[in-house]
Length: 390
Image (tube, rainbow, N blue to C red; front, side):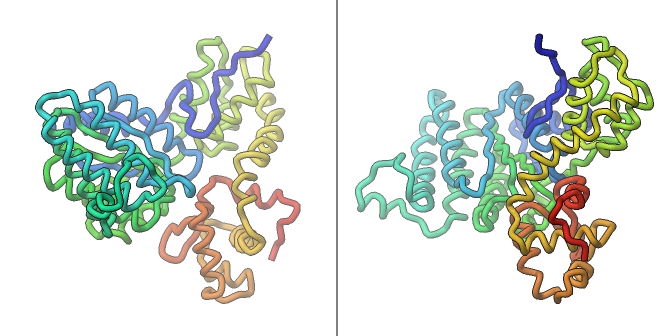
C-alpha cells in the first residue's frame, strides 16, 4: 500500500499548508477589492531567490482574484516563448469573455484592431489574422511601445465599461527581453493614467528591480516592490507541522530545530526534506534521529535535480567564475575578489558575469557584489568532483 505523503515539493506546487505569506495575501486582497471598485491601483512585483515560493504565492493570488470577479491570465516568460504572442492571446480571450455585454460592443472592434496591429507587426510567425498584403501594411507598426500601449488602453477601456477588471500574472519576468519589458512598463503606465482597472502582478529573481529601473525611471512609482524570502522560525514550524496533523503525526522540538537549521527556512527545501523524512519514518512521533537518517538522501535529491539542472547550463568559463565565487568564502562577494581569485582583471571577467546573470544563476546584491540566485548553491559546488579551489 502506497503511503500518503502530505508534503509537496515541486516547481510552483502549492503546499498543503501555505505558511508565512498571510501578510502579502491580506494586502493584495485589499488591492483586488479596490480594483473591483474600478479604482486604479499600483501593480506588484515580487522578487526572491529560487525556492522561496514566488510562483506559489502568485498562483494563490490568482485564485483569489478570480473569486472576486477579476479577469486573470497567467503568463510564464521563457527564453523560447514569445511574450507578445502570449499577451495578445490573453487580450483576445478577455474580449471574447466580455463581448456579449451590450455596453462594450462598440469598443470591441477598436481593441481587436490594436491586437491585430501588435501581432502583425511583432509576431510575424502568427497566423491568427488572415490579411492581404495591403491590409497588413495598414496595420504595420514600427513601435512596440505604441502598439502594446494601444492594446492596454483599449482593453482597459473595455474593462472599465464592462465592470470587469483585468490582472495579468507574469512569472519569471527576468527573462523578458529589454524592449518588451520597456514597452510593458509604458503600456501599463498609460492605462493607469487613464484610470483603467488593469494591473500586473509579476514575480522573478532579484535582478528584476534593476531591470525595471533601467528601462523606465518612473517604474519605481508604477510598482509596489515586495521581496519574498525564507520563512522565519515560527513560519517554518507551521510549514512542517500542519501538513501531518491530519495523520496524527508530530515532531519533537529537537527534530524541528534540525530541519530548520538544515533547510534555512526555504519553503522548497522544507517540502523536499520533510517529504523524504516522512517517507523514511513509520512512527507517529518524528525524532532527531529520523532527521539524521534522511540528511544524505535530502542532499542527493537536491544535487541530482534542483542544483544540477542549473549547473549543467554552465560553460567551463562559467564554472571557473562560480568556483572563484565560492572560494571567496562568505557571500555575497565583490567582483574584484572574484577576479583576484581567478588571477584576472575585472574587465576580462565582466562578460562571464553578465552571462551568468542572464542565465539566472547569480545576481547583483549591490553595485559590485554578487550572490547565487539558488539558496545553498555554494554547498553544492563544494560537493562537485570538478570543483577547483583557487
